[in-house]
Length: 230
Image (tube, rainbow, N blue to C red; front, side, top):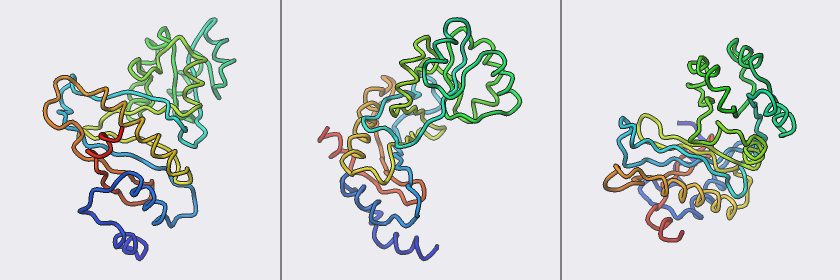
């Protein structure tokens, strides 16, 4: 373990359940990197990730955004392509852009597509799927309302989906954000996750929750207190 990590390890009690405010202030205190790290939330859910009916997937616009410029690519044609040109998206096109992506071009963070483009886009599943870039109606990235969707993404719209172990991972801002803004972003995320609880999921839904920075340690949160204070 590096000297930096040893110093951090002394300050964080791994057996303690931290209040959210206390955890964020501790992350700010132990930060040693020179760049503005991303703050992340990780939630271990009481679901069976092997069951399609228990997948937890969604999106929300964080109250204070994520503090990062997001590059958006829109796939559309006809009148919707004209709308894409006016939306503020960095890239837009139709078949020619699908061809470009098929050759390995992935210089975007979010891909939005109109429903009529999905038939041609499915052939790129092996390229887009592993990177979490495939548009999906459940997260609002398959839509005819291009301008509204692009604006939401620019404002701080984030998508999330549990992994194979039933864990959710979500970016909720930057460590330079005011503590209260990070708390509001995290609470908005947790509230959205609670609303998405599958009816088939029994017992404890949010089993464990951690906050961390992209280069820092995870700090376990007292979930019971957080939900109580919503």
